[in-house]
Image 1: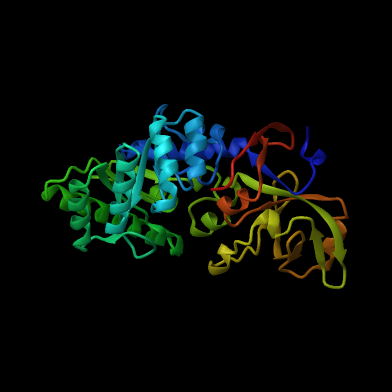
Image 2: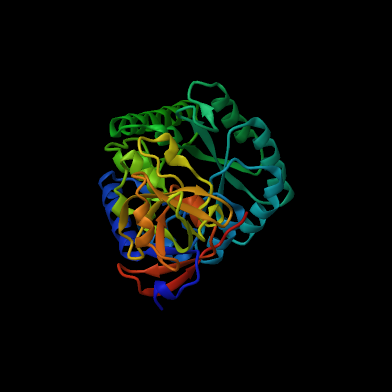
Amino acid sequence: MNLRELETPCLVLDLAKVKKNIEHFHQHIRSLAVDFRPHVKTVKNIELTTMALMRKGSGIMVSTMKEAEYFFNHGIRDIVYGVGIAPVKLRRVADLINRGAGLTLILDSVEQVEFVSAAAQQFSITIPVLIEIDCDGHRSGISSNDPLLIDIANLISRKKGVELRGIVTHAGESYNCRSIGCIKRLAGVERDTAVRCAESLRREGFACPVVSVGSTPTAKFVDDLEGVTEVRAGVFVFYDLFMAGLGVCRIEDIAISVLVSVIGHQKVRGWIITDGGWMSLSRDRGTSSQRVDRGYGLVCSIEGKPLDDMIVYSANQEHGIIGSSSSDKSILEMFPVGTMLRILPNHACATSAMHDRYYVVDGSTEVVCVWHRMNGW
């Protein structure tokens, strides 16, 4: 099967690039002498997750309970659910633990400790937890100087059915950096905040065996993780235009693309219209805040070669509108109706989530296999 035979739009994965991305990332993580826990919310597929693991039997982080169930059913036992827990999910948590999963939850409030403990006693299980730390004001978590950290640890120690494993943080603010220097600085803040919180817990007599940090940008550029036990990252498997805009990868490292067909032209406006709208590309416009705005995606030939300055600059539900920043209307003649193109995404996680399978190529247009991915919550 060849890409030219596929019905569009569909998701294309370049296996040669995936292997190279993973190999380079693993080399860096090994140099830091810490464990690696891939965040599998990007790939949502067992074949790719198996490749992303640095060693057999190591753990993963997930973002949905459906991911946790899927990967446990495929033989992975060590799983961290990486979103603050809500009461309505605890029955599924209990089911996985009762089936043998080593499932760990994260929390950052007294209320969460209370209802996790109640559910653990109801289902006669012990639920391990990590306290989430806010290292940069980006999202959830407890500030490093907040007395709530010790209050929560004390409450966990008094409650039945809940066990403190350590702390976890995520340097999400690194996604707003405009230089490698900024990313490196935030990597240091992420590390120092996590280690400081772990030391605070230990001074109060609490074991803190897990000190977990991670984001793809900070994991890529950090050069010292003393005091940290594990690092996490996810989008490094594919990369995307947003990561390229941060300087984390090159355009040619991006392993995921959406195959689309040209379905028409608007000659007066200089538009090329495709069947790849935001239902296949996603509505993510993350690069609009960066130095180079890539619209809804960067346009490539069917072989995957970027086509100068051509981007999907507008999108409807099932229509993508391609144009050139040079406003050269003669480009229409180069892409007649039926031409197939590949679109590199702004955000690999969001774009991949619009599809149920990967059409895998290995450096050419020949499809070597089809890998299914799971979606949903």
